[in-house]
Length: 640
Image 1 (tube, helix red, strand yellow):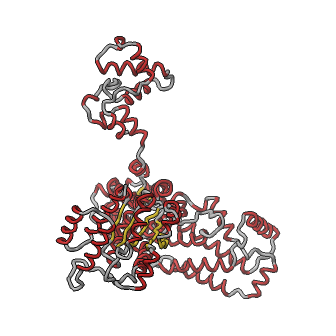
Image 2 (image 1 turned 180 degrees about the vertical axis):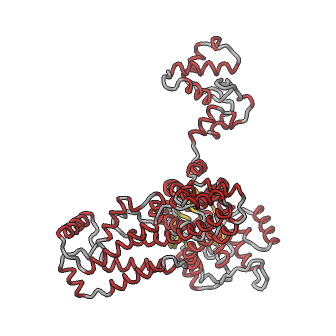
Image 3 (image 1 turned 135 degrees about the vertical axis):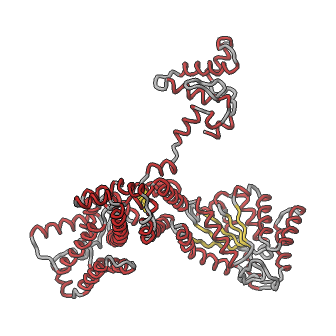
């Protein structure tokens, strides 16, 4: 699963990186010594700039930039620098970081050490960077072997500067660097890549026209994070390649965290990995969660305790209850018979998943384009609904069937062709008769001649279907169809055929899209501990705050903060004292009494009698109860 994920992410970024590398190669293809074309570009003084729109999934940006850096170094230039705003508060640090990373790009270790010594002795400026670049390119011997070959087509390769978080850079630093770089572009060929999480408009908000006019900007858009999520779920969960599956609640938790918190594919995959680890750690029978031939082999080596674990599974007990008495006795007493039956049940579970995902994709083809998307627009939404319950019992499913009965001929044929492609793309042959039936329905639709179509139009049918997708026209069409059925008006050939298609899809759904809980031994491959996953991924801050305030020793590990149950240590941070006093009488608390109690505890820290202090000191403590001296102010703020 890990290797499949890495390969999938490389494929998703391939198109983006290919177009970006073409832009980089084209930008400085004319940079050669004594080039007239380059002289014309100098007059314009425009820095080639790629605006890379990555979306708000900031936690995934590091992986993207790391892959991008490798691609640029392998295909364009060895001089690639990545800078972050936190490392460049001013122009001095900006140039220092730039020079430092440029020297690290050298392959020759001796030259690298010399350049670092030069960097320490000289002041970093664009003049020194330009001199360094000219010296480096002149010293480069094309015939000298390198440890890492760079497929660069230029005698003087460009310098690619990646600003990973362009929005966070100080405006003054960014403007000064662009202005200065444009003046040295003829001797220091620079290409900028702006990593943008929001919108390209941010470039013009940060840079005035006088500065942005020095940039030749081209925008590159990465894949939407929602589309990326759909691809991940499709490749990892909606397949029989990997036996491990997630229950509806677990999948809902992972997708909710993704959609409402971070939009991070990396975090979603980590949550999936955590689910897998929890499943193999907590489920003794997870030893059978592997490919089918290996699972059958492992069944022969199951111990007596593992056989008892199989018998304790709720799904297996329900299966045993439905069998004949003789078979029940054999399953509960005969180990050999139990192992043979387990092999058969695991094979049936594999066939179930094969048919399940094929029919699920077919149903998605029918419902993903319906108005209002009654069963969801993404296949993951439909999948969650099917995992939760019998989908045909829901009102959304009934509404979807009504809309399907209004599809036009060309729409219906297009969807059937997609379903036929889905079934043919599978290497499994369980649904071969279904593919043949769909092919027959397609042939019947294609055989409808023009006369039938004219008859259909003359009869006032709704074969035009969903050309007008607003709710008013849809309701009107449904009422007319209901009226036609009530009056018993004869249907056209297309309407009869369309009804057959809808009924055929409905029968497939009812036969193959049964919830996983109905399958024996589903616990072997399905992770269902949603509560455990929720505790790991969604930490409860209220509990952590209560622990820190009620028992500061838990985090601070200061022996002076140890106290007996119900006691308030007088050396505790004042916010902890106030919180524990509040817990004693939180509902009927009086602010004056609260402050009095606080002053009493605080003065006890100096081992003085609370009555010995002056009234002014007591009033000062009562009025400003949280301004007393803290024992560990910095640590308390961090731990809270």
